[in-house]
Image: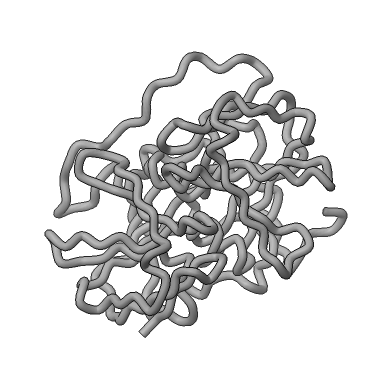
Length: 284
C-alpha cells in the first residue's frame, strides 16, 4: 500500500500494488500539465484506490475529447484520474511516498519529448502509444515561428501565456520532495530567468500562487482553469522560476546539474552525466 499527497496536503489517497503498469510519458500535454520533462504514472485497478481526504479539492480540465486532467485546486499538484470505463486509475508517481516495488517499464510518446531533455536509460521507447494500445495523439496547436532571442511558454488550456527575452541564468533538475510533489513527477525541471526578462502575454489573472508556509522561497504557480504549472515570480530575489515543461520553445540551455539527489525517488535512476549534488549546488 502506497500513500500519496499533493504539495499542500489537501489531497490524501492510497493505492495498493502490484501495479498494472508504470510509464514515463513525454507527450506535450503531460509536459504542459506537470511543467516537467515527462510525467510518470502508475496504473492500478480502480478498486485498489481510495481517497483518504480532500476529494472535494480536486479540479478537472477536459484536455481532449476522451481525456481529462485532475489537479489540486489549492496547490496545483496533479491528482489521480480514474478511468471507470476501463476499471483503472492513473496515479502520478511523483506524489507517492515510500517504496513502490515498481520502476518505469517504458517511455511513451518519446517522439514528442522536450528538445532540452535526453533519454539516457535503457528503458524501451515508443514513439507514441505502447502496444497493445493505439489511438490518434492529440497535438498541440502549431505556433508561429520563434522570434530570435525570445522564448515562449503557455499552459495546457492556453489561457496563460508568457515569454522571456535573453538567455536564462541557470537550469536544474531538482529531486527534492517539494519539487516532486509540486510537479507530480520524478523531478522538477526549473529554468531561472531575471525578473526583468519576463513578461505575461495573457492570463496573469488566471494564475494562482501557492507558497509553502514553512519555506523561505519555495512556491509554485498554476493556471486556475487547467492546473498546469506556470512561472512563479520571486520578486524578493528578482527572479522568475519557469517550469521547463511549460515552454513552447527551446530555452537554449540544458540542465546544469541534478540537485537534492539525497531526496530523490527510489524508482527513478539518474543515468545521464550531469553533476549530482545531495542538496544545493555550489554558488547557486
